Length: 113
Length: 114
Image (cartoon, rainbow over all chains, first blue to last red; front, side, top):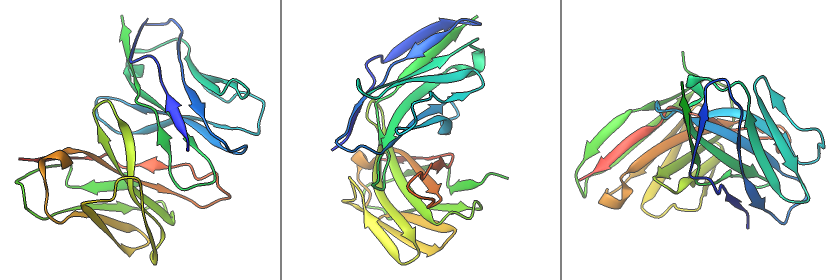
C-alpha cells in the first residue's frame, strides 16, 4: 500500500518570497514517480512538476523545484519568487507500476501582496 | 480547445435519480480514469480503463458504473444517486509509455445530490 502525507494544511507566503511545501510518502516499491499538482479556485488539476524515483537529480520547472530525499521518503516543493497566481491547493501524489495516483490531502497556499 | 473536457460542469439532482457524467479527450491517450474529490480527502480513484475493452474498478467503485464508448470517451454513471455521492468528479487521461503515465485532468464536474 502507498500513502502520501502532507502535514501542512495551510501555508502563507508573501509575494516574491520563497515557500516550501512538505510531502512524505510510504511505498514498498523501488520504482515510482512523484508528482505535484496545483488546484486553483477554478478547480482544474494542473500538473506542476514530476520526479522519477530512479533519478537523483531534483526536478525543476521554472520557479518550481523539488527536494527529493529518497531514503527519507520526502518530496517537498519549493516555489521561488511567489506570485499571486500561485495561490491554490497543492497536492502531492505517488504512482508506482500500478494504475492509479495516490494523493495526499493537500496544502492550501495563500499568497499575500 | 481543452484537451480533456467534462460535461456537465455542474449538476444538481435528487436522491434516486440516474446521472451520467461524460468525459472526452483529444489527447489521443489510451488510458482514462474517473476520480472523486471530497473536501479534506484528496482524490480517490473510482474506475479506470486502459483501452476500450479493458475496464477496471478502483478504490471506491460501489454505486458507480462506467462505459468506454470509444478511445476518446469515458462516461461515469450513478445508477441511483445518493447524497453522499455529492462531490467533485474528475476525469483524467494518460499515455501508456512505460509506466511514466503522467495523468492530465479535465476541469471537473461538481455534483450535488439532494
